[in-house]
Image (cartoon, rainbow, N blue to C red; front, side, top):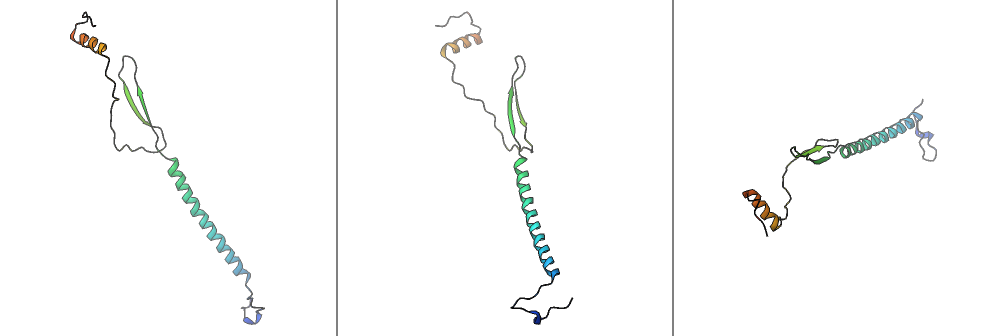
Length: 116
């Protein structure tokens, strides 16, 4: 191939070698592929972050004649971090006056005592 000289200019258009066109198109395709790969990697990381999360399940067990139990299980796909905890029991209303009197009599051993 001969080098391009300016005498071949027709109306300001410089003739381009076919190898230069193929190289330019290959470079554009490579950059597009790189951009799509970066985008796909970001989307995959975001998906993995959202899909691997712990799910805590709280349960309680009580069988007649056995001890009661509380159970906290991780049923999700990721590790669960428990940073703090607190155990409380619900506040119950006070028992009625008659029930209190009967239970007091039972504690004191006075079951035969009548309540009015």
